[in-house]
Length: 215
Image (cartoon, rainbow, N blue to C red; front, top):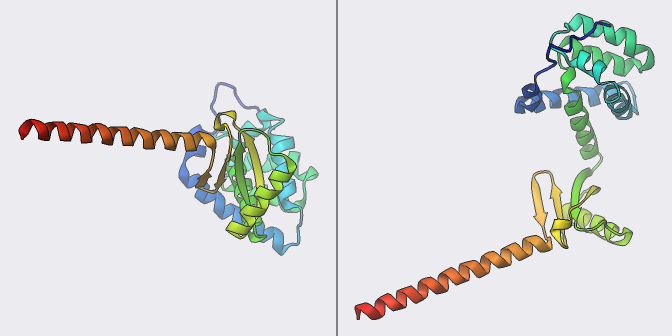
């Protein structure tokens, strides 16, 4: 395995921040899911997740080599053949080779996230972020799950987060849509209404005063 000079940069961060990277990741995610289905691989997503968690996250130097712009494509394929293929399924090892040949290994996290999202959507499920001031008790969690399913017509996969600043209520996010019923937001809205009313009353008083002076 080639050594990576610590003085040389790995893949620039802006590559991962480029919006077009997500579009490219979706193309590979679609191909990954179709290929897995066509050859009858049922645990493809689990193996994908395990590779990121148990290999790349635990061995950052190895991850840097695979995603580095200074290690050429043939060297990356050779690394996959030597270090990964003996421990991976033929399907997943070949998938990594395809990414290496197209210099797309840095997109692995994007591809996994998109693959999981697409698979869940195909099963009528979607991830829903639920933020509350305190952890949800079991009975309320099931109530929230049921109401989301009834209102939005899919099976929600709840991703819970605690934010004490909400004071009470909850914030639900589905994709880019946010449903905010938190107490802090309601108080802000009330404060804005009171502020607008005060401005209106002050302006009305000024108007009456000005009219009286000009009479």
